[in-house]
Structures are given as C-alpha cells and as structure tokens.
Length: 380
Image (tube, rainbow, N blue to C red; front, top):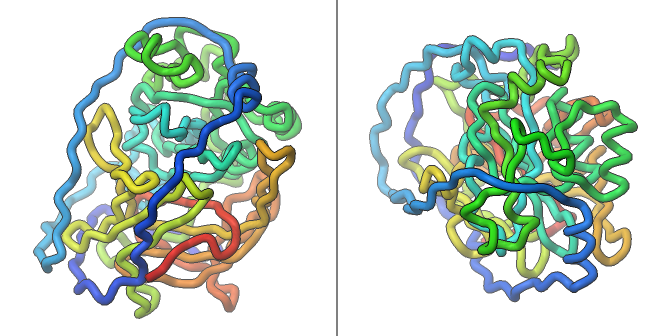
C-alpha cells in the first residue's frame, strides 16, 4: 500500500463547477413492511428507559458561485478515517467504533450521526436501508439514536477497521458472524444502563424498535470495564484509505459530477448534490434533505463512494451482500472516477483502485459509502 501523507494544515481550494453529471430526481412509492417483517424486527430487540434528544432542523445554503474559502488550521492528531488532523490526544492509537443505525423513514430523524467519519448505507431488509457509522475518535461520540440490529455484512465491514461493534440484536446470520469473527461488541438486548437506554421522548411516539440509543460518551470507560482491548491492532496502524494532502485536494478526472442518485429500492435512494463553496456533497434521503436532529444540519461528505456488488434476497426479506469485490465510482471535488474495489478478508479494509489496479487517493474528509447492485446509480 502507498505511503500515507500527513499534514497539519487544511486549505479548501475552490473549483469551477462544470456541467452536471446527474440529475437523479425521482418520486418514491412508500415501502410498507409486512406484519411478518415487523414481527421479525421486534424479535431482534428488547430493552428499557430514559434519554435526551434535540429537535431543530435547518438546511445549509448552497452556492453555485465561486467563493474564497479561508485556510483552516488543524492542530490535532491524524484521524486515520479522514486524513485530517482532528483526533484527540486520548484517541491516538485507539480503536474506532462502528454503530448500526436505523434508516427506515418511520424512525427519522436520527441523532448523533453528524460526526461519523465514514457512513455506509445498504439494504437490510425489504428494500429498506440501514447505516453503519464509523467514528475514528472513540472519545468524541455523542448519544446516537436509533441503534438497530446486526447483519453479517455490517460485521465484515466493522472488522475491517478493527472496530468495536455496537448493535441491538440481529438476524441469526448477523449474530453468528460476530461469534465467528470474534468481534468485540455491545449488544443492546443485554441492557446495561451505562451503555444503552430507550429515549423517553420517543417512547409512545415511535415504534418501540426505533427508540434505542447508545450513550456514546460512556464507550471508552465501558470498553475498559468489560476488559475489551482499546488499542488498535498492529495491522491497523495505517489510514483507512490513501488520502491526498488536505492542503491540495485533487480531481482525478475531468468528468464533472455535481449530482448523483444511488438507488437501493423503489422507495429508498440517496441523492448527493455538490456545493462548490465548501466542496461538499449534501445528502438527501429518498427525495428529502437528510437532516440530523441534534445538530440541525444536513449530512454532507467530501467523498462519495458507490460500490457495486452482487446482492440477492435470502428469503424475500433479508439480504445477502458480497463484501469482497466489485466495480463502482468515486465522486469528489466535483468530478467522478470509475473504480474497482476489493476486501480480501473480513479483517481487511476496502481497497480502492483505478481500472489499471493503481490505488486511488481520496480527498481528506468524511466519506459516504453506498453498497448497491450494479447499474443502480443515476447520472444525468
């Protein structure tokens, strides 16, 4: 793997917006879970009471005009998941945390997820997506809601970061995979009030399975209390991806891309729209801005990775997703690049290469990863 480049200064450089690569506007028909699906979901979870949530929403302004972006000095330590100098001293050399997050429309909005360094999205059941948020700094995780059940492919992804895995129950295959890989995990079915609780502001308002939250600020102490390893393993000392110098973000191609829609099912799709003023892609959830409850902000990412994979239904409800290899796209800095991806074993990170096998350098910042079927994205 190529040598990773570090820097203590981040400079955002403005680029000219070229023609759009995608429109992605779509209408969606609502997905309704069958009574059997709802019963299966409820059987994966159990637990009890209090918490807090905040509820203010606002949408960031977008600008299509060229603007000057000031230099932002970074004084922390290298975050291996973003390539930025934002890691606290206490988190240097420590394991990341991966949390399974509810994404069904009836559970929205989520809270606590705006600070995740990497967010994966893929179908969990009946065309409905679920998220896996990964934090590089285990001392900076807030309360996160709502936490949902495990699937085997989420376990494989978490293992590739040497992460602590947080979930509430799971499919039998998802639970078996945790045991098979020996992955340290906190399971909300076994209600330790120092780790999990039910949000009292959601009880009676949301379905019960949409109310569990994890007390993020307690994670470091609880890892030690349960005798879990907190130091990163020897094979995980490098960064998650090859990153460009934050002061010099790059455009790997000239194929402009200011909008893309990734389709997971008829009713669940994610659209990303580029804002040249801050060089971020703002996320929509199935046609609406994807807002975060506690911060009142819309999810936004420096990098968008579309990983095309072999996906099939196991029983008309739960899914089988190949996490070993495929093709896809890397979108950042207003342009798009065709890629190949691979993950040699569950314990390995995802490798991103170009069509000639050369490792692709990502721009430093937060990354969204959508794993979907081949030819499911929309460019316009």
